[in-house]
Length: 220
Ligand code: URA
Ligand code: SF4
Image (cartoon, rainbow, N blue to C red; front, side):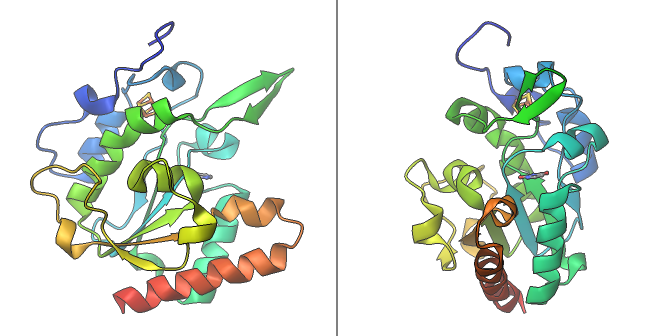
């Protein structure tokens, strides 16, 4: 919605009774729920097993993901895959998505510099996340970093305080009537890109793996 401050949000693009994740993905390709669609290459929808027991929720696609149309295919994706392997999570149990599904960036010359999505983008894009959960009915949602945490647990979420603890699905989170609230647990951890930016990569990486081991144990 170029020029308007409050985005209309994704809801009007979400099918009423979607039968599959593919149906959602096709619909999301046409989403104009906030202004981010205008400059990005394409919607980057979630991917993975339709019967995944664990859903990872990241922030938003990066430069690589925007070009390929697939989430977590860049450097952060490599860290996530390695950490999941080290934690003993079976890739067949996993679906990966992001809180915001278009790449937000600033052009500097020819370079596209990642910008964090704002609260309005997180709110606008949330209906896609809720629709994914409603179809997937995962046992555990792993919240990767602050943006996903704010999308699902509210604006007061702090990764450093809430990471590594299994939590019941937050009652405050809005959800559709048939949403399987009681069956879902949540666990927050660092976003894998934090490992890439940290001075002490090894320590952060080990914390990420420790948290993911809790996730692995929760569904085994
Ligand atoms: N970070 C995310 O949150 N999602 C991606 O797809 C890539 C990086
Ligand atoms: Fe729609 Fe989300 Fe993209 Fe905004 S970021 S246009 S709400 S898919």
